[in-house]
Figure 1 (spheres, one colour):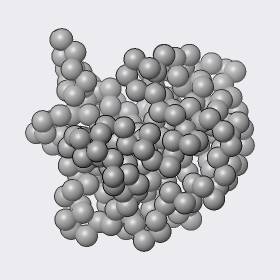
Figure 2 (figure 1 turned 135 degrees about the vertical axis):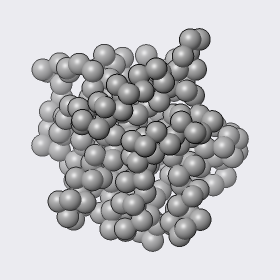
Figure 3 (figure 1 turned 30 degrees about the horizontal axis):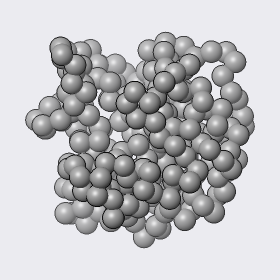
Figure 4 (figure 1 turned 135 degrees about the horizontal axis):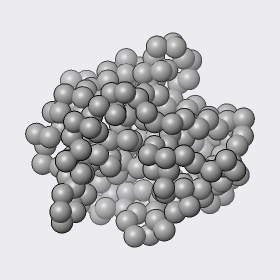
Length: 237
């Protein structure tokens, strides 16, 4: 299993450090974490382990996207819904890892995403992680009905299935082509949901971990909440 996250180097002391420390303390060694960071360097004393890989996020396609669309940063007054620059890092980190697994013909079955403003609370058994998954599905996600896009802080992709790879390629493609700017909102959650619905109509199999969630707190309604806490907005610091 591969877990991916990303964070701004300046957020290290705010929340990324506790993400890394709690991952090292509580996650099983069979889960390998790729922690992508950007716009700076991380401390030399950052937690290390055999299943932790730090990688600077400097893919040329992403750098070109940020330069070309540097004015798409939420505006003034700031509106996170229109901040494509902030949220593009997540998309490029996730899809870079997906592409690497595909090109290397990796035997890793599942690719996970978890936002870096998350902390692990107690030992997380491998069997518990497997219980969140559905091997007949291409993508596992946290749905909600109070708003028209899912909670994208946690995602899982079945890399044994071709539709998962196609989805990830199209996810990146929406950014590289600039097509996302035709949407009402430009953050990754909204863009992900639009693409999810399109691919589902063409046969993508999905598994919603929170089908009964009728508010915005699908993470807290999910089985992840027993082991993980996701900080949102002003609660991050």
